[in-house]
Image (cartoon, rainbow, N blue to C red):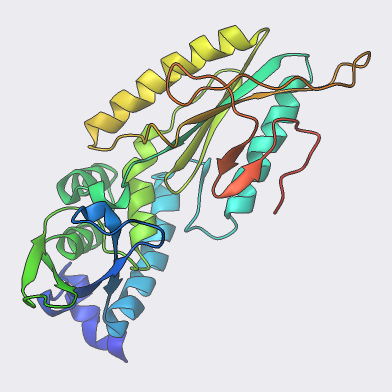
Length: 291
């Protein structure tokens, strides 16, 4: 019933201003020392229920359009049927084992987009959707949905004044993850003798060569390329969350497994384990990822 009432507006690519408002409840972050820094707090955004119903319907529509137009990379997971975090992790593990078959050394670089959802630019996303021949009503609706939004922060002593939100997708919105996937899809690229796979804002780049040293050089070049692509759309990668794993396979004559080297930012060394979509992966690929 609610969507039937809003359908004429959707057909014209219009999202009502009354549905663009939200309340942001400010909470202290657990384990954080109290201070005046914004990083000491977490904001939980409360949206109208009818808004989520409409957005869910639009998510289904836009997902179908995105797949038919090829707007999403095949190795992007999340927000799509049959593409969960487990699928992303299993794809990575399968590729590692496949690349190791010809006795190559395999390394994986794990990247995390810094404040990804907060950096989605409505104009940039609109231009991409328009260039991909997405129906005009959908392009206009997405642009209207992301523009002229306001949020009122709620905390003890708050002035109860709404503030404009000029960039980003709304927290807790059913369509936000899909819009983010569409926004960062251009970051994906083909990797010769390797693979790039992502789950929302978690990216992994896997390469193989005769030596780990050669892998590091390749990963440095690939990181430079993806970082440049990120700057072009206004996103960057979190250095503290950057990790690298050198995958080890025990030699037949030596069952011991050497501990990998370690470093945390490019040019990048190796960690004893890493995370992909919140799932811990082990540097010895004979161990399946814990799901």
